[in-house]
Image: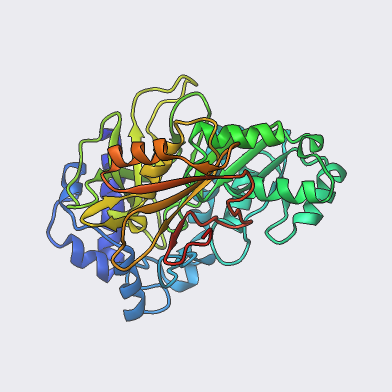
Length: 411
């Protein structure tokens, strides 16, 4: 965390203390400098939900009068009750600028006509990311979800040359195209930008998308309750470039104990966010639940500032006979084998009983004991790995499930 942002942090904390009962209590008489930040209490999604239960609809952490709100978004609620987020007009302008810069980092250009293929309902990935794409300079076609056939018809008619959707969406769209007798490459897309699922930062996943479409793929990252899109991958180095300078502070903590880790090149842990210059629903030391690696060295593309790679989530952890296994760790090992494609893991029993079953797409189906041995050696648990034909692992227009708990869908 560079020292030049200490002043906006003090201004933000003063705003929180004067405008929010929740934050006034949390700050108390504590210091409000950059050095004091790691000593302030951590904030969780459960804290926000409880805050909103006590004072609906936006909670005790709302820091402006309701009449100053320009819009309300709601998180997806995939890990519990949705959280409502207020935006002032200034918050919207900042969100668009941060997202626009992230999309430019991911290669979105002024000459792109880009189809926005995320859900427009309620959460910030819809209209807020639409505005961010417009801020990048691109022309935006608001497709949303459930319009696959229509999109395939519109790509040539509207000269659409880029697509923005979940990581799963390019595979879903390609399969639908082939069902209609359309070669995905014939659509001549130039850029495919993904979001919402870990994995696009891995060269094997990115390469699969690029091979099918003949287009360059790049990933982005955002959080509805922080900034809707706030990082983009240039493809030159590991990680996605953060574009939150002056609008958020990033810390990395030990996901088990919550202790702050040294912010240095290659650090791995859980990401923690603190807003700067956020008016309506600001967050202070917010535990994201995202497990990531951070790079701080300058990138080959010439950009400076931190880069991040999301490897998974704390709530995805599988507890297998006293061994903690993150699906992201399985994916990282499988990604070293370039011939392998998409994969899923099946965990049965409560508590989970080994072995874990992994299904991975490959050219030659069958059991893969050498991969099971590699996973066992590195992750200290028993695995059974089966290769299945390409196209077997389900993909969805929305986020694709990679962990199945209970019944084995392949059995």
